[in-house]
Structure formats: C-alpha cells, structure tokens
Image 1 (cartoon, rainbow over the protein chains, first blue to last red):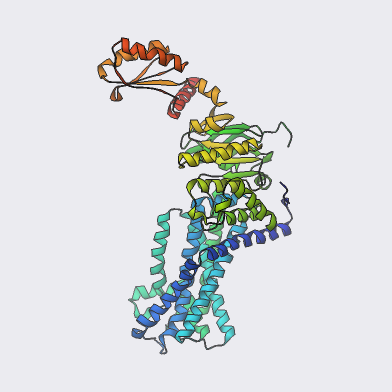
Image 2 (cartoon, each protein chain N blue to C red):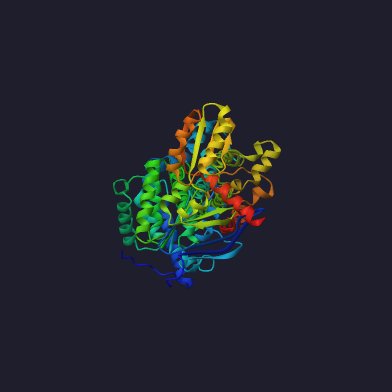
Length: 275
Length: 319
C-alpha cells in the first residue's frame, strides 16, 4: 500500500493549518448530513418559519404592540432571536450523540487537531443558523415585515443574532458533554420552550404578571430581540427600566457573559474526558 | 522500532475513580505480530486499560508505550500507529460507509485522493463495497462492526485495539468479526483484544492475560491457562435427589477429584483431565450402581469458574 503520510509537525503555523483543515473536514460532515437527508434539513428550516407563520397569522390578530404598529414588525425580530436560542438543542443533540456513540472517542484517538472538533461544530452550526435566518427573513418579508434603518443596521442586527447563537453553541457543547443520556435530549427539547417563551419574543413583558415579566426582561433572548428591533427600526415593547433602555449593550453583554462562562467549561470538560 | 521492543507495553499502570481502583498496578507485554486477549469480567478494568493504551485516558501513574511511543508524552506519534475499535460502533450513522471512511481518512491527514482510494480498498476488503453508498442506519449489526473495524485500519496501523468487538452481536456477525481479526493477524498487525468470553480468547488469541480488580492475575497461552484452571467438567443431572450422595462419591472416584453438588438442580459436577475416558467409564458405572441420570454433559469451565479458581489462587498466595 502506498500512502503519502504527513508526519506530525510541531511548528505552530502547521498546527494552526491542520486545525483549520481538520475543522473543515468536521464541518463538511454536517454539510453531508444535510445533503444525505434533504427532507429532514428542509423540515428543520421550515420549523422556525412555521412558528413565525403560526404566531403571525393565528395569534397576530389578537395582539397589540405597546408602541403601536403592525404585529409582524414586532414579531419577526422576536422569532429570529428565539430561533437562535432554540439552536442550543441542535448543538446539544449533535455533541451528546457523538459522545454516546463513541465517535468523540474515535476523534480523540486520531492524530487530528483536538480543537478541530469544536471548530467544525461551530462552523456547521453557524452556517445552519445563517440559512435558518435567511429562510425566516424571506418569510418575514412576504408577511410584510421590513427593516427601516438601512442595510448596515440590519447587518448589525444579524450579527447580534449570530452572536447569541454562538453563545448558545458553548452552552450546547457543554451540556452535550456533561449529560449523555438520551432522556436528557428529551428534557432539553421540552425545556427550551419555557426558556424561549418567557421573553419579549411574542409579547411585551409588561403584560405579564410582575415577577414573570421581570424574568422575561432579564432573559438574554429578550436583550437580543429588543436590540434587533431597535436596529431594524421595528417597534419595541417600550419598557421604562434600565434593561429596556439599553438593549444594544445587553445584546452584546449577555452572549459575552454566556461565552465567558460556558466556553471555558466546555473546553475543560472536553479535556477532562481523558481524566 | 528495535526488534525486541514490544508492540504494547504497560508497566504498573494505576488509575483511580474516587474510591474505585480501575487499574491497580496493571502490567502487560504484547509481542509484535501477535493477538493478545485481555480476559475479564465486567468492571475488571479491561476498558480502562485499553483507553489508557489508546491515549484516551491519562493514567495516574505508571507508563505505557505503543509501538515504542509513550502514550502520554508522545500521544501524537502513538496515534499515527494505533487503531481503536471501541465497544460501540463509533461511526457516523447519517453518513454512508464510504463517507465515514473518507472522513476518518482525512482526519488521519491523508490527501483527498488517498482517503478516497483507501476507503474503496477497505470497503472491498470488509465486503462492504456493495453497500458502501448506503447510510449506516441501514446496516446490520455485523456490517456496522466491520465498518468500525475498517475505520480503525485506515492507516494500516501496526497496533490495533479491539474493545469487546463481538459484544451484542449474533453468532453470524460474531464469526464475521472473528474472520476479519484472523486476517488482520495473518497480515502482521498486533491486536490487543478485550473480551468477556473465554471462547473468544481461545479462538483468536496467541496469548491471554486474565485481568481482575485492575491487575493481570494470570498470563499465558489459552492452553496453558486452561491447564492451570482445571480442565473440562462433567455435569450429571440426577432423576432422584436421593441418589445425590452416591453419585457424588462415584464421580469423585472416577475423576479423582472432589465433586460439587447442587441439590436444587439435582446436579453433580466434577473436573476431569481425560474427558472421553472419564465419560466412557462414568455412564456404565452409573447404570450398574442403579442411578438414573436425566442428563450427562461434558463442558469447558465457564469464565465464572476460571475466576473463582484464579482469585482463590490469589488469596492463597497472599495468605
């Protein structure tokens, strides 16, 4: 058998190159999943579109936006942010399935760059998030939603959404490495719903009972939803408190805090697999 | 690698989880080109040992080398020379067999063309060429295992670790895996194989280490071990419980060893050296003594008996 084997290289530059090459191999694995299961992939994309349509058309008529204006202008940024939070489930499922099946162990027994597993996961999940956002934006535009502050501000809003998704990625990786039972997948699938709905995604927290409203205001999802509403020039929920007045700052701060907590935890957990 | 260097070497490995000593001074030497069986019950430390040797787990103390490379300090080099096939079929269910092998090939840093060619070769060799394009979800248990084996062999590593490769497989799939392991061994690969089954070790291994409580308590060829463990056994199930003492005395006399009895099952059991001669003598002797047997069976010692025997030896040695 003749094979050109690349000898393990110690130079930092070569290591960095392998981290990206191996990371791309892992990313391509997810892209191949999508290509192998096109129906599943489209259904996943359409799920968030369905949430948008359901709330826009079924409940939209009964909703009134605090500052006035159409409900879809309030709703679309909310669903965009909600979808980013729901993404934690996809990351979690992928990571815990690999750990349970022994695929993670196989990766760890290969001479590949250890960081590539995480890098590949991040790239694939962020690509998926971009595609999901695109599907939602198209559906939103068809429903009559518009952004009013120009393209640059809209781009910034999408940036904030992806930042939230990135924060959720670390949470998902950490949880996926900690809990390995199939039951945990179910539990998380159920738990993301209250997490997503206890926010300003669909209604203003001021319409909720006091303590629930407070939780909803503090929800990281609410910060991103409020900030993107501001950037898109869509109506917000018009709260009076400090939280409501500084959505942009919070939409940067929350993902930063989540990443600062769960990124090191996830990395430590991955390293501790060899303990 | 010098010729004298063992393919796998473990010296005094220790690994604790809380109060549990998963490895407690584990030693192992595997000569290049041989199949070595690691035999032990659940929780004996087999998997922990393999995970340390495959660079997945750091030992608390002790050293281990694979193909001459330290598994902790030179893990990178060791990983280019070892293949691991764990207890689960560690392949991506949503990819096809070919896509799995190409992905793992790329992660072994083969070029795209080499990874593709190697995937084709391995699918052919493990008789998966016809189904290589189908997603793994459609594979049978035996096919998954073969794909798993193939993935462990992408670099044709000199050392292959197989952790309970046939657990949960039906007999047909088990034979397929055994065939694959035999062919690997014939091609010169060093194989370290863990198993709970004496028969599996007997079928495949040149040498066997028996592991219990995190250390190797016996080592030798399967034949050597079986001799040490007492040979085959004859079991007699009696028709009438009243015959138990008489049958017990009769079997003890023929076998020249003490018989064990189990009144609940009306069973008398005795170890024998020359199985056929003992059986030939036993059946007429039972008849002339007027003892009716419902069943007479010759059998190998079970793993339980192996362990009872070996651990009893250990305790004696300590005492």
